[in-house]
Length: 245
Length: 269
Image (cartoon, rainbow over all chains, first blue to last red):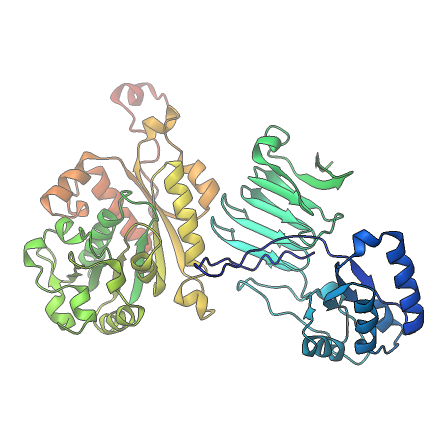
């Protein structure tokens, strides 16, 4: 389910890191009643046993934490394992839950948007990547200087660029992208799968635009609009480029 | 403290060495003690253009390896005694340069000189990286042609992320554009990118436009920086660049084509 765009791949003869994107079901936990959970889980699996067979899942504790319920992670994992699923990650948990997951060898998928905000836990501010200036709201990245060829900017939330994006540059955001300059490079919004993300741009001459994995390259864009402010959004799995009236 | 200027472009053959030679000579002629360093280890050219190739005994790699002192390697220019040249090695490759070695050399030169001009090699590898790493100012030399502009854009990206100033989170390197080999007639006929086209992509502080000129080749071949040829258009253009860099305001020239006598008489444009 995740594409970690910060990863660079270094090739070596024996080992190679690659970024890839695939979907993983997320199991939202909303109750602390383990018996009920087991019952609901088995009912769901019965609907499509082949689909769920040995499937990796990610546990989301956001709802259960919102209700301020505590849940025994070990017991929950045993139930899920018994049902034939593999828990590969957790998210939306408290620091304590995340630490416990790590101790059990389960990844914590970073996702600031679903990070549980319990009354007593201080807000976690992720360190800015790529030395980009970050506005007060930690999820929005603000860039004031031109983005040059070969540069890559990633935002965990929205991305606002007050200058041009050069050909050969790449900007990625989990949320929306706003460009108040010419876009000549690549812009990818909703890279974690947010299909409601949009790209706004005052002059579109892009090499590639993408929302939640649906993309268009310059040949498909050309002639559509240029030198006029536009927005790009996803409608029925197709990218729509429209001037902003 | 000295001001370190890197002359860089990404692409080869656009006029980095010609520009380095000209501006370092220009700064020295204006009374500033200047040194120009050739970072193009393995393909050294600066000494040829400065006309001192016969006087090269030690080079920057000898200094880095401790085989010679900096003063032994520095060559005083024949035209201007405020200008020194630190040549590159012709027999080694670019990996012989080390960040520590270059840092030490620049630090020592900073004590004595006002301006240090670093002539970067083409490309984005070790030599080019070290030439720009310690810079305060960057002169981006670009030809009005798409691949050169694209490479300059790439270099600008590296300047803002891979330099000492970027790593220490200091004030970023000041970037200037020098557009070389500009031929207004060819821009008019659409064969060449215009200054506006280039600035549309790079949007930099324009230091000056150097017109395409025979005097550049003549100067290179004779080992005299073109800035010394004050009658030539390119020489004057480099003179303007040095003056602008030092804070003078001079109107930009050589952007529009020369007006012929006929046009002058009839006021056509």
